[in-house]
Image (tube, rainbow, N blue to C red):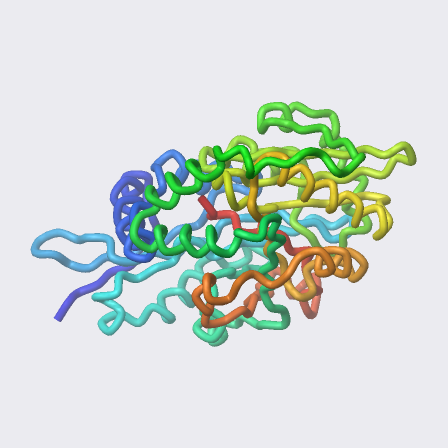
Length: 369
């Protein structure tokens, strides 16, 4: 009978844990790995503080080896003039060969109890985990919405080829995307008259645009992830795993908007965050059209965006859903659940009886790499 123990993660565990985690994700995406620098950035550099992390170890002879893990990564939120500290479950796993030997749910409950009043709420984004986490107090009143805008008639053929290559090797998929993106026919000329300021991560981090952007935006944002400069630097601009561009717009009437685009795959871009202030729906629609025009001029075949059914204000949702379509389900491998589980902690219950809907963009997927 295998003996197990659980404990808090220590600095000396990080290299072994990252190695085990890479083996775990490599079973689903061959060739995909996370560097130790990416791990440490995620765990130690968040504006909301360090992540809380716990290990599951199994006895192996006279020593112990890591076979599972759970962590809560802090994410700063605002709700009007209130500051909230929430946390995302991240890097949670138990190696398959131990799943019938160890009661993972009890372990996660113990982690939540130990985190005590550290967070106002916790959430998860991993498809299929809603039912697992319901006994821990998580509730599901929202669902993921995967959207995509294609720019070329041969998009589906290239998407299918990229998906199949990725099942075999991440490197093969990346090489395919780079080779195809260099074809001249994949670039188009400008069709929109709206001009964006195009910023590198370094330029965005230094831009005056973001100096007081969220201070002005938060009052009308509802409950939303905080987008101060420090939050955007941690999540995107200084993150070792991020490759992308930030597009900003400032209108004559003082209306402002930004779009952060992940360009790691030169064929299939991802919109990983956007927000607008004093921008009417019609104007936002024109900004999205300009965004798509920018993508096609840079050779992208499509742009993906993840939100939730209640994750955007109704006028914004109408703009987005009229210009993008549900992400191709066969390629998404029929995700077992689209629920978005959230849990109001004891500390959060002293402030609210029930969580309102959140502003949801991929900024909340903090452990993406």
